[in-house]
Length: 235
Ligand SMILES: Nc1ncnc2c1ncn2[C@@H]1O[C@H](COP(=O)(O)OP(=O)(O)O)[C@@H](O)[C@H]1O
Ligand SMILES: [Mg+2]
Image 1 (cartoon, rainbow, N blue to C red):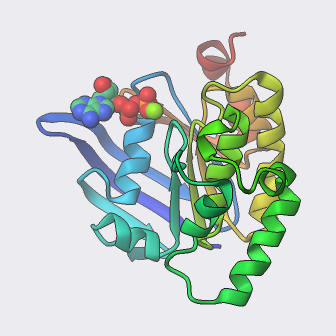
Image 2 (image 1 turned 180 degrees about the horizontal axis):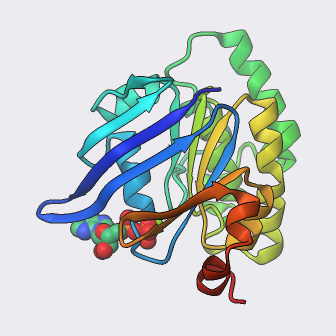
Image 3 (image 1 turned 90 degrees about the vertical axis):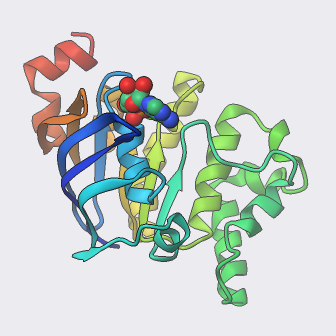
């Protein structure tokens, strides 16, 4: 577990500034939901944390500034499951999982983690030798998360894990998040369009609008907020 903190972060693409003075605190061992309309800057926020987009301001893990190179951020224990998954389609399920552990040397622990992940996501054990590209959308999302966990991160960044999934599959995935947080000792920042579902499993929530934080609070506070209900919850 770790804390993740953004303080006055600005980021963008070339001259187009997308994030303006974004400050977010993701507490140790919590699930924080990042909400906002399309184009609000949610993906850019995760990319700034991972070092995939240049930013100014402070991004701190356990109070220390993160390095600027993406592989150094990963080594620090930050795993990023990008929007649209992040599995290697031509590789088998098993090899995708092993690829997630490339930076590790603790072989016995790697084997133990593989076993735990097959318990958590039985389909990944059943389809171990199948090409990742042949899995269903939900299975690919599970594989992407499991692969990230094989790196033994302390912070997990999930970008719209429900994209393209059926509602029931999405729900199955989200109810696993508190379990992942607890059993894998994770601090989670999850971007989600399905606000109701994300708020039901999240501890805290942050709402972005045009690259600015417009609301933060506990998931309960945010879901009870009239404007949020109108904008994101459809009632
Ligand atoms: N690679 C890019 N180059 C230029 N502009 C981009 C790029 N990616 C995203 N943007 C712009 O940044 C803004 C925020 O995008 P993004 O962070 O993807 O939003 P969200 O994930 O909330 O939908 C949008 O206006 C989008 O058009
Ligand atoms: Mg996005």
